[in-house]
Length: 302
Image (cartoon, rainbow, N blue to C red; front, side, top):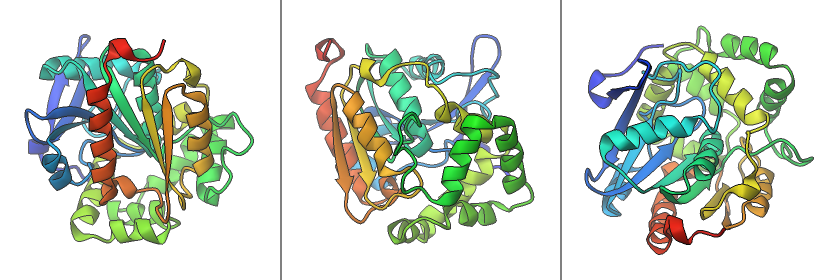
């Protein structure tokens, strides 16, 4: 799978020499929002930039380890990601910030909420992947997604082989179609948009340019113990979930919203998994910005 032009990436060298790549969208001096993309994804994918600009936000998207142009980080953990995020924010001169996590990016947002309560003011989790430690976690998932979660949880070595097989030999266009073929009509309408489709295909090409290892590792991370308790997340989290989502079932957000103390759950009728990349972004970002203005780290629940 091919990459994309160098101009859309900024690369930061961390202590020890590992590199992180990121991109920024929206208003350069706007309200900082770190966008945690799904799995597999890269810094290329982002919500509608026209809405981001309209609401005065500065969206930062970071290639997680092993994706795009960020170096792998063997043995990485969800909580350990906070060190990388802090390094990028420090590099950009950003102190406090907001965060949005989509699909496989959801666990990373919640890990950041747990690890960085002094800097993260509020978060949104949109169709986020949730823990598999309750009976209904996978109820309503498309069979291919259910199988993937279960293999990653119980047979990670087999899952790595399966991921290598399904990604190997496919063009980015073919992979995008295969990966979303089960998504409901509302998602297909977003995917078929010319501008989004072009970005989506380029995103998969870039995400997998180093191979499938990071893809397999990240699903495995989300499928097993996260290393922290959701009950200990102390910043406001707004969970958003599409009523028709069959990629990350709605039960995942319901169970997480019950466990996170300062949380809210909004179920979007008729929506699927990719709603954050359509007009719903205006509502999600608007409410997140408002929550950030009304909350400071020192005033979050103890």
